[in-house]
Length: 348
Image (cartoon, rainbow, N blue to C red; front, side, top):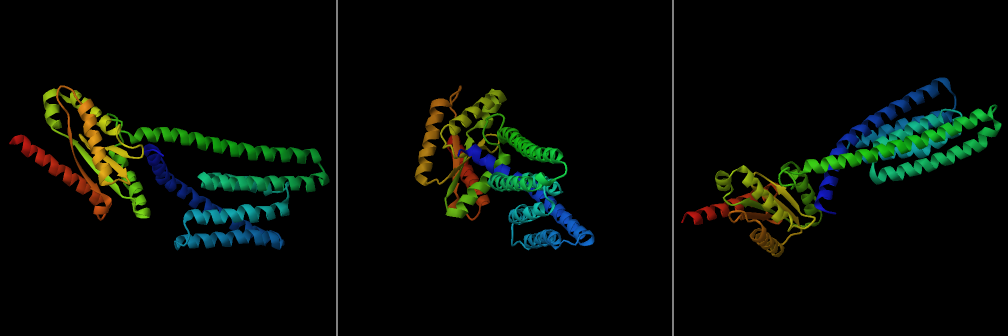
């Protein structure tokens, strides 16, 4: 997986988790409310203990999982999955048994289908949706065999059955296709928003996500990462003498020299006006030295205009710092020290 795919996955997870969490909370509360109303209706107007039992079970389970979520015993995902498993594979079969295909079970099953498509994504959605659709198919076939031959109006029952099956298929395919199309459009938009317009490197606004990703790897398996900060030497002088168009060309050339020599999993960020930041996972002193040498050779070979272009650098490893913020500060400090030494040398 290259750096852009990693960043896209991290950003989507960060953003989608927020919106999906809101949807899950809304659906959970609506489901608990609907189950409470159904339980009260069964108690007031029907004597069937099975009806009361299945709806009361949904109310009790909703209360339990919400409480466990509030106590931070369950994550919201686990709470929602637990509740939906009960609704899909306990409540729905019993409800179909009670009302049959000519009752309200098909309508409730469609509402549950929409809830699944709204609340979940990825592997969880695929597994739950496939299992639920297989269950609905089995319940539909069973109900059709048992009920339709004994109904007063067989053609109308068949039409109802066909309409139900078409509704299930259309709703599933439509919502899944829209979700896929939205993901594709969103991916395109996000990829564009990640990039700096001038250099086409990652921009600074996604640096926090990059650092979160690298820090997660470091905390899980102590895979060290290194931050290397580059600064174009005498860039202000170039701008003053040759103009901003010339300066832009210099920045694009330096960015290309750096970007062409990194690994596909490395992140290259335009950190400031003439500052570039490279974030490397599983880096060592030896690999860092080789990388810097490749950059310098590339700049010697490619980054010529009217004058030679060079860049100073400073680096820091996560293992020598207490926090990610310190890594960035240390790399910046070492870069500043090199720039100061270069200025002192040039003035001698």
